[in-house]
Image (tube, rainbow, N blue to C red; front, side, top):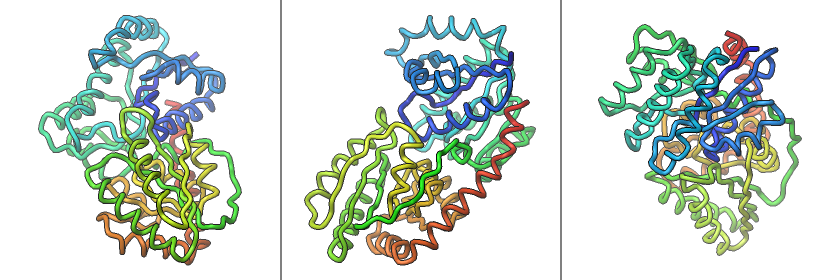
Length: 367
């Protein structure tokens, strides 16, 4: 029996990161005689979500904060038991090594990597990650220490591959689509919706408060000629402030004439996809909200906060906005609503192509 350990931002109530985890669980479920152990911020939640479907086990990530030190003995015991069973570690998904807001994220995942590597002493494979931006010398040093000690590296974009080669010239990173394109998504038939239905998802960022005002003005103007049904979709429940931002938007949108608005508290990528399949279009910041929209065949307008968002949405030929300007957002929404079928076809074809390009991941997890 092969036992693999999965390391990543799992159990943190981020729907995108949970989609990456389930994508990996699905890939490993295709391998015979393979057991998966997930290191999670909330092992009970991880077991509740995936224990029955994928027959996994789960234990705590290494506690970095003072309040989580209570889990340290249990964390060490659980991982120590895996020493003789584990064969590989897969360090998966998302943009973990970036210092765009602070050094903490890089330090946190550097600690997690070293803890797992020193305790298990097994090969570590980086899968489906993006790297950068890394502006601080210490962030680059810590990331280099990880890259020079892994068995293999796959990244989800070309700019990450360039950065990996710069930091660790001996690495030969493989570029493959985001793991969310491998998510085992049920098929949902799109239905025509009247009035215009728009899904909206925002995240904390330096320009978010400007985007809020632009979105309010744009939707308010559009609602003068057609009723609009707005569905708010927070993609993370704790730590990040997605929910509080959208609660503020809900109050302000409710005051506008000809607009109905509601909040949807969803828990999985599949639930978000099902909702998006009923929408005319989506407007969002988080990458996996936008990928979910594409996979649902729903056109999207990306409010880009990073190169990773801009790159994939440009490739999908969807509107990408960099500055919070009402004229640009109005133009993007109108271009989709005036030619919705073309944009829907574009979204479906792009998502389908990316799913096909993800096939090498099956070989990668069979190492």
